[in-house]
Image (cartoon, rainbow, N blue to C red; front, top):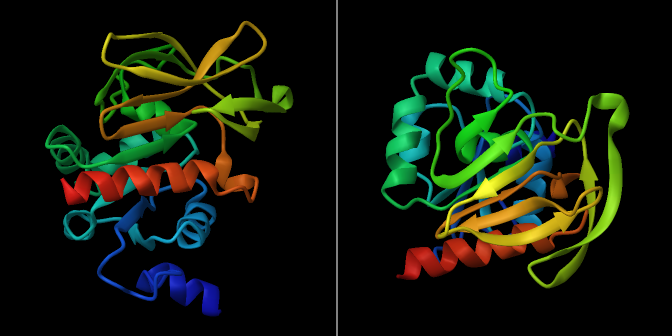
Length: 214
């Protein structure tokens, strides 16, 4: 019960101090609680975001894994689609894992008819590129110079990136791009929230702190 209260109230390991960022987790579908816990362990104040007013109250946002088509449709239903696009366009830091990576892509392959994203990263992402649920796998890889253990579940990969995008990680088979950054936006096709390793979340928190200070 105490964990549930922490998720809803936004009480993290920072204890509510003002010198740490407030990072929301888009709570429409996916690994919401897992991301909240990892943010707390990484030193941020974490809260859930379901409505435009809640989005306005945070410094940054995580878009969790799940189903990209469901996230898109629910964001539209909850009147978050355009507000999210505007916040991202205006420079709000955002991190997308798995389906969240798809939602941050400017262009997608193998999407359903009419599928929309929040956009922001100049890349082409292929949905379910590594295969179906039964093809899920784990792998050790380099993320921004740090070794991490990555979990891939019906994961996308990045087909191509624009000149302003930095590739932070690749995975086999095929040396596929699985982690990227463009300015204040970060995306991975794997799920660091499921491993207990906070390095990816700490990387994002550092990004947010730098952006907020600037």
